[in-house]
Structure formats: C-alpha cells, structure tokens
Length: 177
Image (tube, rainbow, N blue to C red; front, side, top):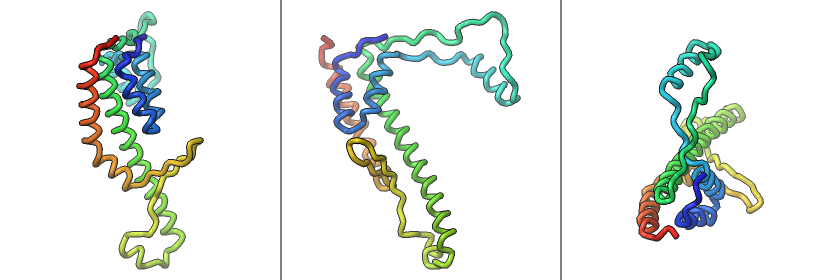
C-alpha cells in the first residue's frame, strides 16, 4: 500500500472543489491499492475460448494464484499517474454521458412518435421541441447535463489536458517532503 504523495493533494482538492468527489475518492483508492497486474495472456485466451464455446471453465492442475499482488505506485510517479487517471476517467465519463443521452433521445423520440402521430410538421422536419436533460438530485442540489453540456466539455478537453500537464510539471518541481 503506497503512501499518498502530498503533491497530489492539490489535484484532489481541485476535484472536490469542482464537485468531482467521486473521482477524488477513486484517485486516492487507486494510489492506495497500487498498479494492478495484467491478466496473463494464457488466462485471457482460455476465458475467451470458454465464453465462445459456452462451456464452464475446467480446473487444471493444482490451484494457484492467478494474479500477482498489486505494485505500489512510488511517490515520484504518483503525480503523473494521477494526472493520467483523471484524464482517462473524465474522458470515459463523458463517453458514458453521451451514450446515455443518445439512449434517452431514442426513448423520448419513440415516446413522442407514439403519443402524437398526427404532428406531421415535427415528423417531417425530424425535430421536436423537446431536448433530453439528465438531472441528478443530491444533498447539494441538482446537477443538470444535456447534449450541449457534453459537447462543451468535449470542446474544453484540450484545456483540461493542458492544465493537467502544467500541474504535473509544476508538481514535479516541488520537493516530496
């Protein structure tokens, strides 16, 4: 289990201030657990084969540990790891949000078509006045996201990458006391 490098605290505080507490917790847990080893290629191939053949996996030989222990992330590598992790997770979260919006658009469009088949003008243009907005209610209020928010976040992603690179460079120059 690795000890959290104090230089990573600035990034964690920034995530919390941006209401990305979930990502801050994931980041801390990721550093605490360390780098998980990859599955051996032989184990992956056997798993793929048993899925394709719809067969139950068969025990072969003596039981043994399939995975090695996670490797701690050294303090001098935590800054780069944290920046890469935040970038990857936010990118994945945006992709998931986009997919959710597309699915909801499909559901809303199908519902509108069933409810109002006589609205020829909306069907002819392929557009409706309704836009899907995701709303998450929590103790701090509500959070809303729509297609424009996701598009704007995608457009701002290069700025995030630049800010993470700048933070990484600045943090690398600090002492790890």
